[in-house]
Length: 461
Image (cartoon, rainbow, N blue to C red; front, side, top):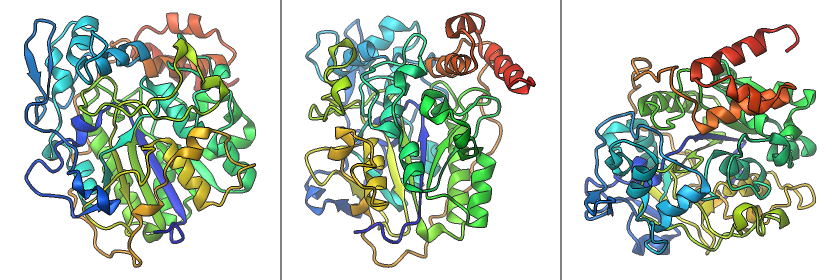
C-alpha cells in the first residue's frame, strides 16, 4: 500500500454531475465488486441506486430516480448550484427532509420537466467511465468539498480552501481567491507540474482563478491537451498533471446540458494516452467531478468536515465549512489497483478533493512548512491504500473507442452558464478590463467566443 512505484499523478476534473446520475447503476446488473477498501467496509454493499428512491414534486407526485436517462443532454436547462439552492436540494423546502429537494428546487427555479434531475445514466450510456470504474477503483463516498458551485469546489482541489467563499461571486473576482495553490507549492519544492487545457479559445480556468499563477514564470506550465498526449507518448509527463476539459466552444466538460458523449470521448482520449504511454505502470490517474450541479444523489453529505482556515470559520453566509457537498464520481486508475475495487475512507473523514492534495503531499514528501496550510488537507485521507498490488497488472480493460464526433451541439446563442461567466469576468479582470461591463456586453456564448478570440489575437495580448 504505497505510492513508491508512482512517478506521475494525473487528475482530470469534469463538471457538475452527482455520483448517482453517473455511476449509481454501476453494479445494478446484479454483479458485485471484487474488493472493498477498507476490507471491513464490505459489510456495506456498493451504495448506488436502489428501487424506491424518489423526490416529491411540488404537487406531491413521486418522481423516481430512474435509469437509463432519456437523453445525453439533460438536465436542460442547467439546474441551480449556488449555496442557497443546494441547501434546498439537500434538506427540502421544509429544511429537515434529507435529499428531498432536487425536484422542487428545479421546479421553482427553472421552467421545464423537473424529472430530468432524477434521470441517471446507465453503464451502457457511459461505457468508458463505467469500464474504468469496474476495471480499477471507484469511490462511492467521495464528496464535493463545499455544498455549492464550481469555484469553491475547484479551489479546494487546488488550494485546500475557497478563502471563505461559498459561491463563485457576481462576478467572480480572482483577487478574492488570492491564496497559494498546490502548483505554487510544487514549484517551490522543485517538483514538475502542468495544467493541460482542451479549450479551443478560452484560457485555463485554473490559471484564471488564482492571481498567484499569473506570473510569467508559470506560463510554460499551462499547455494545451495535445501537449499532454505528446508527453505521454514521449515519456515526458511531469510529476503532477491537471487536465481541464473544454468549457465553452464545443464543450466536453459534461456540464448540463452539454452532451455527456463528448466527455466520454475526451475521457477515452485521456485513457488511451495514459495506458499506451511508456510510463503507464508509473502513472496514477484520478477522474472526478467538481460538484453535483443540482443533479440527484441519495446520500446526505457528512457534517464532519474540517474548516480549512480562519477565513472559513465561518465564511460567507455564515457557513462554517463543517459539512461537505454532494457525492460526486471518483475513479482511480493504476495497474497497481486490483480490478473491481470499491474504496471508502479508512477513517471518519471521507474522501473529498483535498485527498488529491494530501496524496501529493505524502507522495512527494513535502514538509509541513512547505505545504498548503489548509486544515482540510491535513485531515484528508490519501489514495495510497488503493495500491494493494505488489506487481503491476499486465491486463488492460477492453474499451471500444466511442465516436469522436456527432455530439449534440450546444447552441452559441444560449446565455452563458455560471462557469462560462467566470471565465469571461476573470479574464477581463486579468486583462485590465471592467469585469461587469465585459459580462454585460457578453450575453451569449458566441459573444464570449468572440471576446476570447479578439483578446488573444490582438498584438497587446
